[in-house]
Length: 324
Image (cartoon, rainbow, N blue to C red; front, side, top):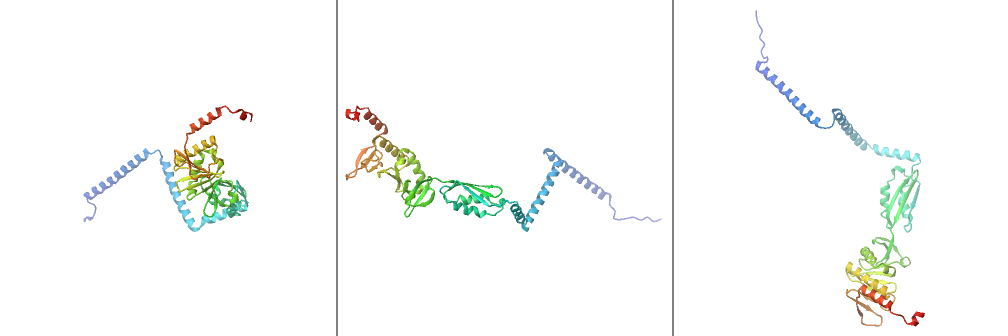
């Protein structure tokens, strides 16, 4: 009886080695699974919540991809056009523009910009863009644009307030308190307003307003402020008299307050003196018409001037004055 012997089968050594690899793989899987499970256990999210999160991420990615493809295909533009048609069919389109708060500004400048939206569907009106265009107008300090359904745009304008007239080489320009130029005006519209002149004066309007605020009693009598040498001011009053102020913010404000107090006591404005020069600080130089040399006077302190005034009031008056 013959016996067939098969060759090429696994030897005992190979079989043992194969079983060892299987055990190593199982151990690695168990170790990895336990590590991931331990990490997930520390997070306050359940397995079901993790599944929903992953599902949401997948769906979100798919939506972004779909939107990108649709954008290349022009779908959003088509949807926008369809929305506009639906809005027009419902009567939601710009047919009327209402402008409020305009006093000095030419309303046509507002309507020119607002009527560009006429017959446009309300949802397609770019409110912020229209507001930005209105803010470019010289008179507009602020603007608010709102939709008033079904067919109106309402525009509320806050105008800048004219404060002075800037004299340039070839024209007169109306400006606000910040020096912002509003519009070119003629002598008739400039009449009665404070005139500001001198090279670079337009950039000094804010500082000028602060200086005038130091002596508000003089403001109604002030006719012109000239910026001299890009460093100081000359004031011309409605009486035609000129006051030369020193350089520097503090020094000029102090000099102007001193002059205001002296005028309150001695009535300098409207008197014989044509010009007052206070640039020296401790001295006031007075120019009187008919005299070739200036009259020099010490700059009195306000307290001393006030005391002198009180003493003069306390003196007994002659009987002839009492009768009058």
